[in-house]
Structures are given as C-alpha cells and as structure tokens.
Image (cartoon, rainbow, N blue to C red; front, side, top):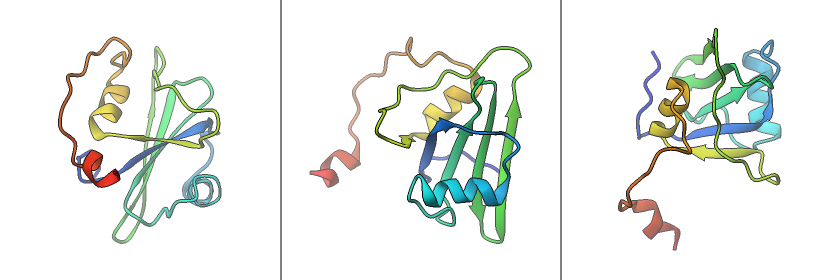
Length: 121
C-alpha cells in the first residue's frame, strides 16, 4: 500500500518518461541518470511529456510497486527544474499537492524550522 509520509524521500525525474516503461526500465533510469539506488525505499516520480500521466516507483520489502495515474482532463503542474539536474527532491506534501492538481505557484508557505538546514551547514 502506498503511503506518502514525511519519513520517505521523493525524487521527481526531470525528463519526460514513456509511460510504457515498467519496473526494470524505470529502475534503470534511477540508477543510470539519477545515480540513486532504486532499492533504497525512496519514491521516484516519473511524468510523461503531456503532463497528464504519472508513475511512482518504490521498492517495498519484497519487490517493486508502481502507482500509475492518468488524468482524464487537465495536467500536472510541476515545480521548476534546474536544467543541469536530472531530478528534484520533493517533500511529501508537495507530491500530494501535485497529485491533487493544486497550483504550486499560488501557494504561500510560511517559514518553518527544518532540521535539515542545521545538518547541512
């Protein structure tokens, strides 16, 4: 079962993905282009060129799972991507907003303490 919690890391692949790809080829993208381990328990997000389909790849204890969603109307709004980066690290709430179709640009986020800011310095 898929649970989007703060205890996991989420990576959005910045390239366009052919939605015919499945477990092996998506995990190959994670290894070769993102230079990450698909067996880590992280969730990897792939979106097609039309931005109306999304696949989430994750490793559970005994195998890969794919969550696949196709919109019947509309598109997914994605955060801005650095042209030199192959992925964007997302927070669980950002991924939920993307999947729910909420415009990310119109949200105003208040400043909060984040533990990562201390450990990164």
